Structure formats: C-alpha cells, structure tokens
Image (cartoon, rainbow, N blue to C red; front, side):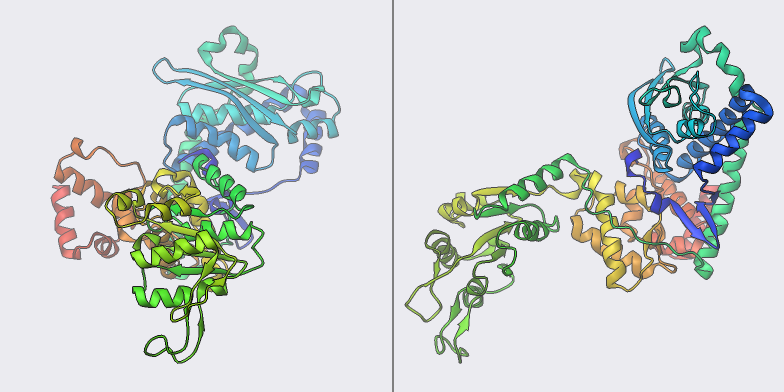
Length: 540
C-alpha cells in the first residue's frame, strides 16, 4: 500500500447521520466556528494554554489517524505509512501539504522531515479571529504531524513550525526530528506536548475499533444497512509507463499512420484503439472491430471485403464488407497474427493502394480508412518462421505501442478497479456499488495473469455476490484470496515448510471470514470437517 492510493470515498461511510472511517466516527467542522473557538480560548485561558490544548488535540488526532492507517492497510514500508499522514491531512482540507524531505534510518533511529503547507486553514483561522501573529501559530498542525510520526516510528518525534502564514509568510514550513536530533532546541516546546499516555489511549481506542469493526461487518452481512456511492477514478492513470503510452496515443491519433498495438491478452488493446479513434480527426465516423481470429478464412474474407451475389453458395445478394462500411473511419483488426497468407496479401493492398476488391468481383473500390491492428503474438518470430509477411508487418507498425501487463504497472490496478466498479454499478443497476478499502491489498498483491479483462470479471463477480453494494474481500474470486493471503506481501516460499505455508493460509482465511468455518472451508476448497481437523491439529 502507498499513501497516494488512499481514496476517502472508500474509507468513509455515511449511515444514519453518522460519518465513519471503518468504525471510527468523524465530524466535519466549520473553519469559521473553529476560528471563534480559538479566539474564545485565547480570551479565557491565554495564548500559552490555548497552544497547549490545540497541540495536544492535534497530537491525539495524528496518533489516531496513524493507528487507523495501520489497522486498515498493509504498508509497503514505514516511509509510505509516514506519508499517509500528510495525505490524510490534505484530503481533510487543512491545506495543500507538500513533503519536501523525508529521511528515515531505522538502524540509527534517525528521523528528519520537512513539510510545507500552503493555504493552511489554521493560519487562516488565526488571522480571521485574532489577527497577525508574532510567532508561528499552526499548533494543531504541529501536534498532528508529531503524533502521526511518533506513532509510526514508535518513539517521540517532534515538529516545529519555522515559517507561518499567520506571521505573513507565503506558506507554513514544518521541521520534524527525533528527540535526540533536536537536542536543546526542543526544550521550550516539550511542555506543549505533555499529556497523559496519549499513545496508550490510542492503542486502547484501536482495540475497541477493531472489535466494533468486526461487529459492524457481521451486521452488514446480515441486514445490509450501509450504502456507498461510487466515484469513478479511471482517468487518473498512476504509472509513468502508462502515462507515456497515453501521451503517445494522443499524439499519433492526430495522424493517419497505421498503428500496431501489442500486449498480452486482456491488457486493453481495443480500449486503447478506441481512445486513438476518439482523439483522431475520424472520430465522427465509424469505428469497426474485426476479430481476425474468430472466423475461418473464407468467412473473414467476405466479412472484410464484401462479396457479389452468386460468388459462392449462399451469396444471394451483394454485401458490403466491414472495410467499406468503415469509410472515413477506423478499422481495428484484432488478433492480426492469426490471419492467413491470402488475407495478409489483401490487407497489404489496402494499406498500400487504399482499395479493396470484393469476393467475386474484378473491379477494385477505393476506400478511406485508418488501420489499427493488435496482437498478443510475437510477429517478428512469425516473420522468421515464414508465417507472416514482413512487408505487411512494416506497414502495420509504422507506430507500435506495447501495452505492458497489469502486474508491471501495479499503480494502475486501483484506478482501473474503481473505474470498473463505477461502470458495473450502471450495468448491474446497483447505483451505490463500492469497493471496501480492505480489498486494496488483495487487489494489489494479485498478479492478474488475465490483466484488465480478468480484473473486470473479478469485480463483476464480487459485485454480484455483494449483499449491500459493498465489495469486500470475501466477494473476490478464491484465487485472489489464496494468492494474496491476509493482504500482506507474499513471503519467500523457500523460507517456509509446507505445513507452515498451509497453516498461514488457513489462519489468513479464518481471519478474513471472522472464524466462520463454513465460509472459510468454501474459500479453501475443502469440507468443513476437514477444516475442523486441520484447525484441531494446529491448536495441539
């Protein structure tokens, strides 16, 4: 899990007038109201005690958020977990949070972090209610950052505000270090962080929330009380390699050059071809798809080029081929590597001469089409083996775009899954269909050999099996659960015995099913009695 994968839409749930984040109740507040509250504190207890209260409030908030992130997600490393704090803070509306420097050395316990906050709501509240400050005044933010980092690092981390918009600076700058690194510079600030066992309170709160979450999940499965709203996210491509592909596709779309799209089955070659067509000057004209591998040669030739009446048995009238139907548009030749030598020659003529000859006819017809071809085969190898014409290959791949498999661009798994959820919500007429955030680690850990097509099938299956419009891990296909285990990254199988591997997987599935043996046995593919015997052996 990485910090920028977080989506509030999947974390939050609104039910019966309550806003929850996986069992932890939240409340939105008005900056105007909080500004007045800040002024009242100033007037009643003075600036020093106001700073102490707001810092401690922020500290507890940061610790609670860090604990929630640990409870909900499995982080790749502590660096990603630490960056979830600024990300959550920004998503909650405190301002634009930019992590300028983050250095962590767990072996020496060194910690250093620089964070910039633009448009700080706390600085704005101070200016609105009290006026320009003489000293940095984002005490709530200082407390939050210190609390979040301290929980993640399991030792005291303190942030000091070096620049503040309430003082007239353009933005607020915060520096965070461990106690030892600060030395004497932190002494005057420590009093503002003092409180009775905040981390112990957070740990107790976390345990309570875990119990509440399990109870809520049980209730949701039984009576389906909670509803979620889908939020499409497909447009936000994450991986640099796919961003490059989309930029390339957008550029070549403006020209009529032939394109060859390569990649494994299910990576979205047709989706990319449609994207090119939509952004081309031919977008107002037809986009015609031809699956070259689905038809025998005689039928494919007739489908592509058309035929004259009487040219073969069953040809009772003239027929216009797909290439002619796509006049001024785009033809997508899927699985081009499966066509025969005869069809290869005819397509080469289309590319060279821009004309076709119908089956049973002698007069060529001029056409104006753009050809986009796709294949999951190695056409270079096919050329070397004499199964594909080299001159046709050169004509087809004026521009070649290779779409990498989903396992090589894991950053795109979540945006794609969210897009599919939104689309399936309309298709299946489940308007409030939504991914639960506990699915994130399972989707990320699985390798997706069938790529986007497999992901779509998995999401559709999960949507159909969901009881309340929320897709949870138990709704996903068993193979995803078996590969991903309990949501953590897979360990080296060579470091575990067969018995240990089996026990680890059984424990993970039992945890997922909240100790429901019937459901766990179904996921494991064994009978409940067999599962009972294995559990008894594990306990002995």
